[in-house]
Image: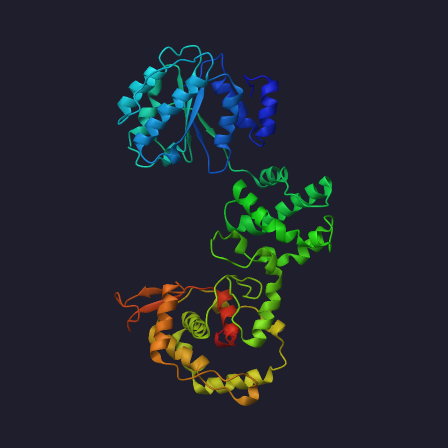
Length: 485
């Protein structure tokens, strides 16, 4: 496609706005000076695809007065119209050839008043076409259904005006005007995202630029493939934010002198827990373990299995050893959560087989024969298939009975396990159940009306297999031993 801008203007634009060469050429053909421009133009695409950045850079390179209105910052339609008039007046005052004072009323209560005021501002403006850009106009608050069609018809009273609408998704009959040219800004591909991020590597002391660029590119590729792409639709701001969070912890061995920037496989092996946990993807104001402490979590998990300490637990099907979160549960709520998980993932017809006294004695004999099993063997055990299916509803009485069978039965002293506490007050237990409900670890599945602890209420656990394994090991319980294959 031929362009109406000279190469000396297109080259800096293509260099500053990378991966948008086609869109720049299309915009240059439509709004370049010397040729008739369309009265309206629509730029559409998902968030963070360079729509506003591209049109802003292009308007600065051509000799046309323009104004960009951020519609998202306007609270009401009146606020939008009044701000538009103010921005247009400032743009005309900055134009040297069109420098003139036009007195307009700052109040604008309707679209008809806005058209009259805008027509007064642009009166006598015939030398150059004025370009008015509405950014995110489809997300304008309290917008009337007639707002966009009215803005699309401004050229009927102001012939020298070109209106550009930046929206996310074009809808049929959005502007009620046929024949509007549209320019699509597609999402960045994987190679485009990595090339854009690779242009601005974060600093690393005592590292030459070539090694730093290579390390940053491989690190950005690894972050995109392991964390960002499986979690959500990759965007440029999300990838930059994630790389910024993980870069200090990833390069800590280089700063300490243990590795160099050229030893990427060794850095990856040492920082593997960084990419196995999803903590970096969470935006929170609560203090959580920093990424630099994540490599120590497997050792803390193994220590917790020996001491019974309930370390922070985290989601994931691989267990709670490597992935942790800021949640810490006391002993009784942790036991109730495990019992709730067993009630959700164990059919009621197997309760007699699993939780009766006869099955408990047989289970203790099996555990006594497997005393040589290491904690690493328990950690690498595969999750039962029944633990991966959806949670089933259960009654409060059944969950308390499972809790009593699993945690309140005394073990033999020859087993080497500590005796679990018995005789907890019923009021304390129900209070902890209500606490778990308030934390959304247990959710209502039906019945009960407004009473949280009603006897006919049905509940469902709201944690996955990895969290259940981590919480169970924190209180000395292997969840797999109580689940039917």
